[in-house]
View 1 (spheres, one colour):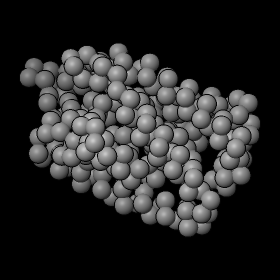
View 2: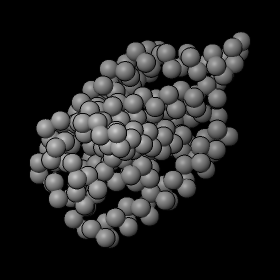
View 3: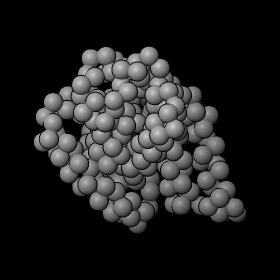
View 4: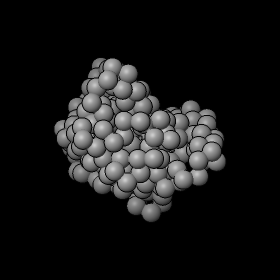
Length: 226
């Protein structure tokens, strides 16, 4: 869920914006460095950004009139590292807030942190761990992306619980409420995103194997058969 415009208290919105800003700056530096060293990677950067935009714009009605959606950031995190997805997510979220009324400007920092920082970091770490223990690449990618999606929504639930603790149970009760509401729709969406990302990765492994190898994915061709 993108947190809607004006939903967070001003102080929370400012704090999340301040926390996200360094990741966006470091991510821009990371992308510039990779593209400067290997200009042929521009196509993959564009594919990752487009994948994030399209998937995160697909809204599914959830409980209490809210919505859930995939995030699409796992693929880019696996390809370019977690930092690269912070500026990508910022651009995607900004366009969606302005053009689709999805999310908001005041909540941009909070949404960037959940979708552009936490989710990609989880995807990257799990994917690297799976490669380290030599799991099949397709399985590793599916697990990494699925859990990254869920971690994004858990982070959003934490943000909401911090802003709106339960009058009786406090933060813990509010977290259980928010996480439980979105689990109904987000779990199947996360699984679907994992499967779709594996399919797209297999296409890239077939048509852009050289670029994937340049990114340190020597098993890319094997990934198409996993």
